[in-house]
Image (cartoon, rainbow over all chains, first blue to last red; front, side, top):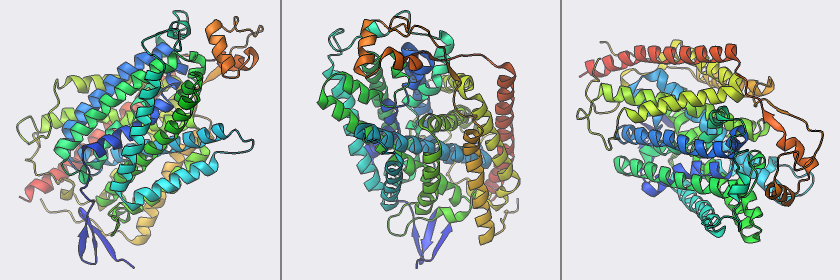
Length: 468
Length: 125
């Protein structure tokens, strides 16, 4: 039996200090970010069409793309400077304070765990739909997906992200193949955008529908900020994280535009808004069995890649909470052989399984979006505080994002619009979740914080922040 | 400033804290589902005449619906299932108050804790 003691930044086993392995490069960062997000093109984004029409889905694709470009710019600067596992959690700890860090870690865990749940439901439903066997349910497929991916994560981060790189690349290439197979430069042969998106139905609910569509517009890109979770396992964080994140964002903007164009040109918005498999349906509607099967496989791969990345990220955020004693330090153990946060991976496994069986796809997506938007609101304020406490030139930054404070202001304003969009459909849920975060914050501030070593919360070699 | 030494937490205390967190997670995520708070309000605006024309579908749209295996009767409940966006001002105000109160508490309490961290970290040097 292994005797493990968790202290500070590492786990000590039989006197040897064990830490996370630095084995990842920019391609892995890209695979982690795009792998988590790409499933959004295969399902989820299209619910924006349900809320506001096909044109609203395109408008929010662009505007929410702006929101995420701001997220990627801000994140790249802060993370290339605060390179520690936990990503935004470590940022909050060094810039705002322990309670904010605790909340940010919970945002991350909830957003990623519910995204993992959504992926597993999508995968199960897709297989059941393809099989077309009466009485076949998605339960066994969901359970197998979550358990096998958790095992993969348990075994090692390099293997996990190598697998992600391959399956994400295949899923992405399938979108490109579909796009060029339908002669996108010609209308009327396969694509019929003019006849499906008409002046009469493009915005069926008017501009209020466009605002409502923001809720699911987030799904085009939700999770790209997850690249920062690998900060402690990347060989050169200052270089790899900005490159990987920005390349991922560009990749996703291209994929989102192609996906909208093909899907809106192949199916009526009412159907597009409710289908769980818009790209697979697009493949079917081309009449090509090859494309249909390719998009079926790509939907499964995208769901797998996303769930895989989500387990990776949620476990690292939870691990960080344990390591800093914000939660019991038992969670901070690193596996002596595989060098992974194995207890955190195992702890989150039954939670994901439970919600995969009690929530439907739409609800799981909304849970994830809610935590994501709360986190983006924090990020917009965080960068302002970062620049104020350590102005340019006072510390070494791996990357400095341009046009400050414009990205932060844009991000904050778009978060407010998204809160309003969520209110239009899921207001009570938003209030319930915010009350939960409020109560758990009281628990942390007035009870749990007494177990936290104060000075250890600041580990960066920076000067004292201005104003303190 | 004297360095703060946190108390050692017993195993039972750790288990209790884990249980608190697990219960809180399930209450936060499961309760809205159980109470029916999750999910957007949509309702079907029924039509008497169930034809593609009455459903606002042109020839291209109708052919795609048929390719997907739908008839005007089976597509009716999908096409006519609409959102009714009504701004419920009291709920909106409550939501805004809850969100603002949460973030104000978060930043103020965090700042208090952060000052302790900074004082201990930099007074040690």
